[in-house]
Length: 81
Image (tube, one colour):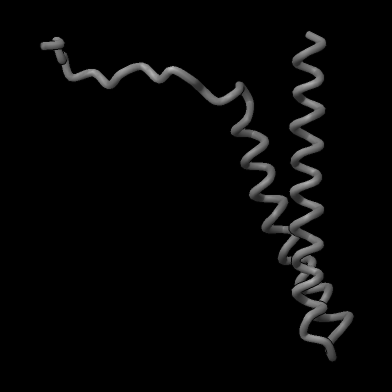
């Protein structure tokens, strides 16, 4: 039998350093983008119900793209170092 001294096993993998910053920024940017897009769509296009949803989707897409770009640029900097 293996000896168990109450410690959890060490993980065999880990997230890349600094990824938490990108995840947090992505969540914040997504929330802001969805709210801003929804408000803009509702204010500018009051007659069409789909425009608010389109604005929210656009805001979310921009946030995801911005987060990816930020993470990719950080990755390139780490490779050069």
